[in-house]
Amino acid sequence: MIIGAHQPNFMPHMGFFDKMSKCDVFVIRDDVAFTKGDFHHRNKIRCNSSDNLNNPMFKWITLHVLNKGNLVDTEINPARNQEIIRLIERCYSHANYFHYWDEIRSILDSDESSMLNLNMKIIDWGMSVLNISCKIVFASSLSFERRGKSEDLSSICDLLNGSVYLSGDGGKSYMNDDVFNVDVIYQNYKPIRYKQHLKGWIPYMSFIDWVFCNGNKKIND
Image 1 (cartoon, rainbow, N blue to C red):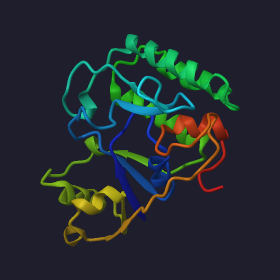
Image 2 (image 1 turned 30 degrees about the horizontal axis):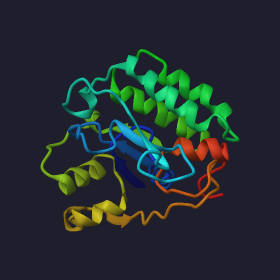
Image 3 (image 1 turned 90 degrees about the vertical axis):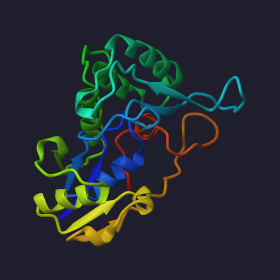
């Protein structure tokens, strides 16, 4: 059984879902601390065909965070989501599959104040559209001693009776494979080049860029 894990990012890029698609069980690391410079509360979308200082080819969409603790406890101001809604509508209204917007907007337009809950509603929706069916487990629901990045992931694999741990490519910089009781493999994700709704192509946009441009086409189709 292949175990993967990742923090519950806001509107993550397609590499997040590619990793999910390769796992039997995917662990949401909601037990770690919020990091302002990470993607817990923000991501990027295409907005322009040119690329200059005043009109770059992408913009950030960012949740308004009210407190900083572990991800499971982080709260947002849902009223500020209207800024994100307006920006997405302006940037993607002419995309071929913009009809999916009604479903995403209904999530963003709610009064959900938990960042984790909002992010997971969007991730669950993305899994449905992209036909991904791995089991989701929240790390905060697991009982183990937090000791270090590699040690924690090893404990998670043991608790879930995994046989393989699938790490993201970034894990190569900190993972200690020797502490694991299972085989450790790496994702080696390469962004798929696809036709975006604007001229040019930029990788690592939020997955909604893929959906608005490709509909429910599977990742590996």
